[in-house]
Image (cartoon, rainbow, N blue to C red; front, side, top):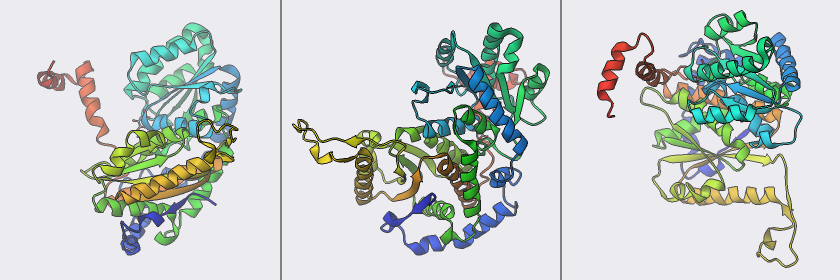
Length: 445
Ligand code: PA5
């Protein structure tokens, strides 16, 4: 059994025929994607990636991961956006959100270059003191400011500590042929891995971008790719009624047309938090353009039932929820009865804690549905490499179809450039002088 879309709780909010009516649009989106005739068709390498990937590089990734495991107590993964979220999401989901605190024979992993906070960087540097370190710097363009800045700092740190041998500890994932990082790597003799030309950052987790850190954390790459391959095959079915990724995409679109401008991805385990960040980037950057798009957001329950739960239940009716119903937790905990029943909780005893968590989900879906919030469900059998590989591909396929239904290019991100231009101008980057003067006049400090 693989990831399944369950729309049973949506009956009060939309009729089946409303989804059926989208079948021609979904078929057109499917054709545009598979025949490479749609917007952004030069970024469709991810569609066949689970079967059509560089097998020689895949082997090299495994070997590099084994080397990192031997040479480093700490692996620093430097990248931003699509160049780090997927790896972090998969590691936290498969291992733990407390991965670094686990007893393990794989290195601790810290993610740098995804912000410009000096405190954050100093804290990671102090964690590295006295420990053996390797760095995987990931940037498709090779010029993104945040990772470039962090890499500059870690490159010096490694060179100060290891001298010439620092180059044995630096792994670069970047463009096949061009860019500052590629040029530096070739000059310095760093091992390099490729971000394929036709795979955009947010669709790149199943390339070396995600795979090297994921392998270094001890996850099974073969099983991850096998799960993605199963999804690639299952979700190539053009029939809306039979393709759950397409049913999910069509349902999101139908709800958007009814004024639900926000999707909340709901999980019941903190190990899903960064996967939800990956989902937010995937959908937000793919759909949010041309004044259109659902705002992707996420909550972890029951944690957030004690904060945002109030708004969801009773507040503005601007959103719908998609519940991640993960049938089997990675670990369970049997709840023993207490002889004194001092806390009155014996009614919960005599069962696994996962049953209580599942009941929290049922109770929440019923309450929110009653409160007028449409609730969709994605049923996932378990958290394993295979199922996570399947889920990643499922979301990527649903996102692409969803973007085409909206009429946007799901594979570009023109809006990301605006802040960069202002940042470069205000920081005094050569070539931005005119813009700098105009911006400084507008600043209120
Ligand atoms: O999805 C995307 O394309 C972006 O999030 C990029 O991954 C991000 O901006 C980092 O870019 P780069 O890998 O070129 O440093």
